[in-house]
Structure formats: C-alpha cells, structure tokens
Length: 360
Image 1 (cartoon, helix red, strand yellow):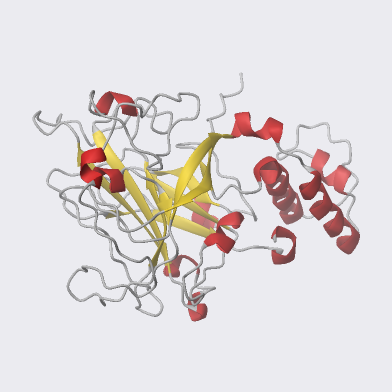
Image 2 (tube, helix red, strand yellow; image 1 turned 45 degrees about the vertical axis):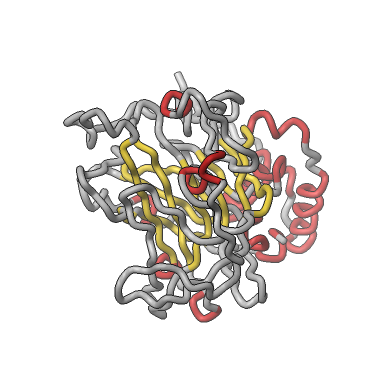
C-alpha cells in the first residue's frame, strides 16, 4: 500500500506590514521581508553573510508550532541582498529556528527533545491560546487550511495599543548583537496567508502555464505532452520509453506543472513531506547533515518558490535576491535545550533557476 501523501500548504503574499508591530501579535505572524521578530527569552537572529560578512536580510518569517508540542516555534530565513553574492548559494543564506515553552507554570517534560508526533502544520495550535481573546486581522498565522477556526481564540488587541511606528526601509537602525553592524538591510514587508493546495488547485486557470510550456517546446524542440505524461520514477509501463529526455527537463517540468494551479505561491509547507525539486537533487539533499545539537536527522519542512523573487523589493530598489527554489530542512525532533536563549541554526539547499526566462 502506498504511503499517504503529506498535506501541502501554500503561502501567499497578503497585506503589507505597517509600522513595527510588537509583542505576541508580531511573532505569531508569518511574513516576508521586514525585520525578524523575537520570541520571549530568545534573541532575534542577526546573521551575516559568509561571503561578504555584511548583514543578511530577512526573506521570510514562518510561525509554525508543531502538533502535540507545547512550544511556540518560529523559523527565520535570511539571504544576502548584495549583487556580488547573488550566486553565493548556501553561503549567502541562513536558517534559524527559535522556540519558547508556552506553559510557563508547568515544568516541561524531560522528553522535550524526543521525537514529536507532528503531522500537520499548526494543527491543534488553538489548544495553546487564550480562551478569552481574538486575533486581529491582518495578523495572519500560517494555519492548517482545513480548520478555519484553529486560531480563533487568540487576540493581542491590548498589545497593539502601544505600537511604535517605524518606516520599513533598508538600512534602518535596529538593536543588534555585539560585533554585528547596526545597519540591517530590509525588504518591504507583507504578511503571508495560507491556502491548502488541494482546495486551491481546482479554481485556477492553467492557460498561462501551458503557454509558458509551449514557448519552451518551440525553443527546445521537445514534445511537451510527451514530457509531462512521464512519471518520476517510471512505473514500468512507460508509453514513450524510446524518447530521450534529459532528467533535468523532466524534473523542471514536473515542478512547473505542479505549481501551475497557483503561480503566486511564495512558499510550500509540508512538515516531513517531500520537496518539489526544480533541478536534479545533489548530494547536499541526499546526504543532509544531522542536527548539530541532538544528532537527529533533518527533514524537509518548507521551500521558497520563484514567485517570491519579484516580491523581495526595497524602498529604494537597491536590494534583490535571486534563486529558483530554497529548500528548508530542520531537526526531526525539533529539539530545544532547556534555558536556550539563542536561535538554533538549521539547513537549507538553494537550487538555481535553470531557465529564468520561463519562470518570469
């Protein structure tokens, strides 16, 4: 019997983030751009590029508590916006995981670093919130798409009364760790909302995607219907086994076909699921490094999508990041040592765009 496919949630750009939200209303929101928000008792990450040693810009912040875990959980993905580091690969990217035990009055179980029974992103998160409050719009968290009430009981209205305004522009001065430059580059910030891939796919036209595929077919002389009908891996009964098609082409167009239903997706989330490769996976993917703290294996959690590239803009148009897709891998146990006060670094794989013209 085939294994059940993990659900996939899609992140879409939503309303812009105005000012500088503070408190739980900030760190329970998922967003692109801006500055990283910090969980209580955990410092906000302020990484620098391994190539140019300049501060990295926040690409996305994802609030993603796991089912059956008492921890708030926040992931930050950073990249170097410098043109000279555009092809820097993983050396110009950083991923950090922060966690905060929600049940402050109860002792955390001794097995908190053991494996979690997590299957779905944020499912059951409503069990952790206040019973008397409601979350204001547009402070959108990335919630499991089939449960529209999963975050209904959280409200941080009182926290919003003391907001301080700050323009979201590159180079704004922010508190930083010792030894890190005080000028941190920023992309314009937007909230991220979520849809279930299965629910979204039936209402979007595929005409544009088919047009792009036809353009490639004309340029490369490849039979597109023939290409897309083939499965990876082969089911042993290939209809076009005599046709020679490069493996990279098949992977690329499986990617294009899968995202065609929702071309504006900027993020795909599937905890312990399967990534959607844009190019042939390298040894970086097949030989992932273990968690540097507990030694557990890392698993796929989410990936950044090509549509995000054009949305990463700064107020003065001086910042940019180029990529095809970025695969984010995190500790399978989501370990978090007691009294940990700094974010834990995770792992990412950057796949470059194999055909930039086609994806734009």
